Image (cartoon, rainbow, N blue to C red):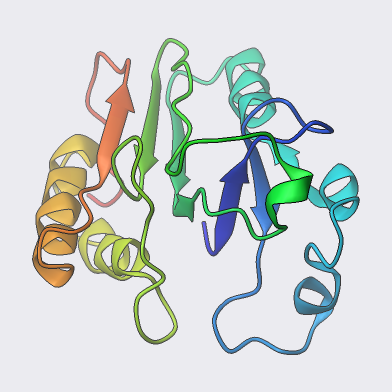
Length: 168
C-alpha cells in the first residue's frame, strides 16, 4: 500500500502499480526516481496482475491485495493512450480479495497529511480483533465515505469462500 498510480501505457499494457512519493516526500530513493520521465514506467512499474498471479501460483488459500491507488496520469497525455479516469478492474483469482481505495471509474483522494483517507481508515480498522476482513473492509468503506463526504467509496472484489481474520 501507499501512494501509487494505476495506469495503462503503450509500454505497459496491463494495469500497473507505479510508485509515487508520499505527499511532502522530497528525498529518498523513491522520490528521486519516480516517473521523472515516461520511460521510468518500464523500469519501476509492477504489473498488478503479476502480483495476483504470483500469489495464486504460490498455493496460498487466501490472497489479499489492498490498493490505495488512483488512475490519474502523472506523466502527461503523450505517454498514455486515451484512458478513462479511475481504477482499473482486475480479475480476481480463486480465494482472492482485492480492496480498491475507490470504486471503478473514480479516482482516490490523497487526502491531507501522511495517509490517504483509505489508508488512514484501514489502519484504524485492521487492528480490531475478531472481525473478518470483509467486515473490516465494510467499516473502512463507511469511514472513507464519511471522511470524503461521499466523494470516495472504497470497493472490494472477492472470490473468498471462507473467513479471514487479521487480528484475533
